[in-house]
Image 1 (cartoon, helix red, strand yellow):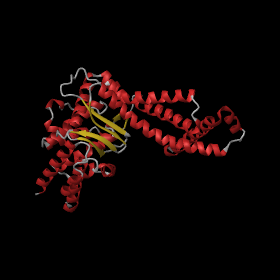
Image 2: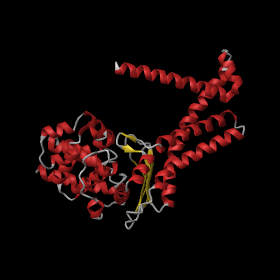
Image 3: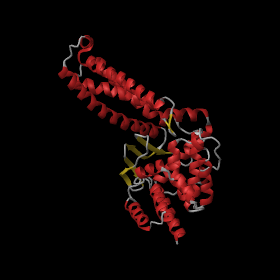
Image 4: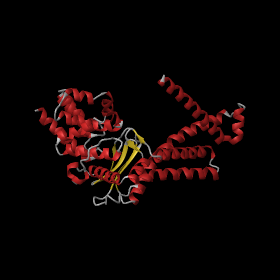
Length: 381
């Protein structure tokens, strides 16, 4: 019954949206007179077809522009706030800066259209973390484009193509600004507005945020976690996954234990998070699933635990992202070598990882993955 109601509700919402778009397009073309003719079934079909085509093309182009300029907004306001550039991504393509210059690389996280990774100097005061303008920068740019589009539409005759483009630029700008500006979380990812709200409420969240961006910056520069300042990783257990920044601090701490070779301790931290059950956001559970499996295989190696963790959902997630993530490739390697005893597949996965060694968004993560692969080989002897 619930599924049936959802389907019916979806159809009704879709129908309402469809009618709204149709009448909006008619109004764009012929104004109020067009609406009156439409009500009397006197519509210029050729104009409607052309306008629909213009609107669809404009929607695709402006959505891409708004996503790209949203991330550019983070970049610009981050630079103005004292951040240093690490990478900027739109879709699967990222512009990355390391010690050798700028490079184009591929990376993707489900549920994100883009990402701007910046870092702060090591001596940044944890009490004075510049969090607002960096997080708000993307929304500010989207709202600026929305206001610019409205101004142009109200004051200039732009023609059918121009009208369609700027109407869609206004629509996508408003939509993306609301999606990122109203404090929300999506399956474990906080949007910009929620990040600001959490850090405004809690100084500890600001400190965790600082460590997250500094850690990401270190990995982008090719450093391993064990090479970063130890005080960046705080051993604070998590009793509720609702504290987003505390949860991410705990995950970073577990990753540090991995990189230090303290596999039993790391496994226990992942078990601690896993024990929180359904309260753990789905994306977070999927993101740490690969690490949890590697730690299990390098310690207690309980087949039933590996099979429980490596369910269909995690299999699909790792399969869709292992080419961008050396850690997930290492998880597949560990499963093939230590769980399935498939040395041929393990070798193929290792060769694939090494062939992409210069393509990963965070070279430091690749170095850790290679370390874990070596430990798997030692355990298999």
